[in-house]
Length: 386
Image 1 (cartoon, rainbow, N blue to C red):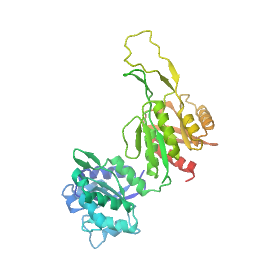
Image 2 (cartoon, rainbow, N blue to C red):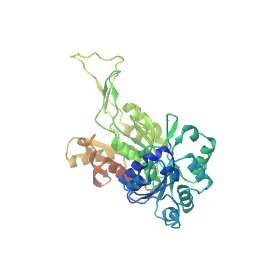
Image 3 (cartoon, rainbow, N blue to C red):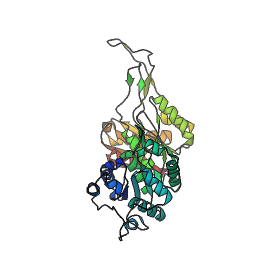
Image 4 (tube, one colour):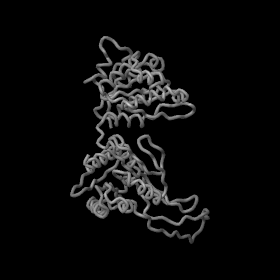
C-alpha cells in the first residue's frame, strides 16, 4: 500500500506517543520508509532510541545547522508525506499559527510551504479536543488541504486513531487519487436470512475481499459507502445490512448518487419465511420452503441502466474454463464492467486466486486479499476512464 513512499513521522508529547514504535513498524510493513522527528516533550514519553530502532534511521530531536526540516520536508526534500502522530492540542494550534518552536512544528510549516502532503492524527483529552480554539485550529488547517484522521472518542479521551485508519489516510495523501470526487458503493461479506428469532441461513464469506476493495478505492481518492453486516471501518461510510433484501434495497437507493458499484458480497440466493417464534428442536418432519431471493445486480441495473458495476462470481467447478464461461455469462447478462471470478475454496482464507474477466480479456491474480482489492480498484479506474 505504501511501497516506495517516504514518510516523515512527527511525534509530539501525548501519551499516545507510546504507540509510535508499532505505528512505525506498520508503516514499514506496508512498504514505506520512515524517518522520525520528535518534540522534547515526546522524548520524555518514548525514548528516541526506541523510535530509531523502529525506523532504522536517526531521529531528529533538534533543528541544527544541517537544516533537517528542509532536508526532510522542503521542496525536493526526502519526504513524500508528513504524518503528525500523535498531534497534541498544542501542536495543532502551533501548526495553525505557523509557530515553529519545536522540530515537529518547524517540519510542518516547511511541508505546508513546500506542498508536501500532511496528515494529522490528533490525540488528547476530550475536553481539549472540544475546546473552541482547538476546533478552529483544526478547521483552519483542514482548509489548507491537510488530512485529519479522526480520533476515537472513548473514556473521556480523544484517543489516537487505529493504525489501519492512519495508514489508509497516509496512503491516500501520498498517492495519486484517480478516483477523487467519485462515489463508489461496495458490498461485502455474507448476508443472513432469518429462519426464526435464533437461526439463520448464511454462507462462508468473510467479507475481507470486499473490505479491501473499499479500502483500495478510498486510498485512490474515492468516497466509499460499504454495505455489510460488520463493524465500522475508517475508510468508508458503513450502512449496516443483514439480509439480501436489505442489501439490495440499500444498493438500489444509493445507485443514483454512485459513480460505480462493486458487488463483492456473497448474497444469499434463497430466503425463507421467518417464523415469529423459535422453531422447537427435535422435530423430524420439519421442512423449510426456500424462495429465490432478488438478484442485487439485476435490481440495481434496472434502477441505474448506465451505472458501471463490477460483479463477483463464485463457483465450485474447479475448472478455469467453466469459471470464465460463468463469469462472461454474468457480465453479458447484466452489462458489467468486469467480473472477478474465483473458486469457493478460497472463501475465508488469507490467500486467494481470482480471474478478472472483462470484454475479451482474462487475467489472473494470486496473492493476499489486500492485493486483490488493489487490483480490483485499479481495474475500476481503467473502466471508469479516469
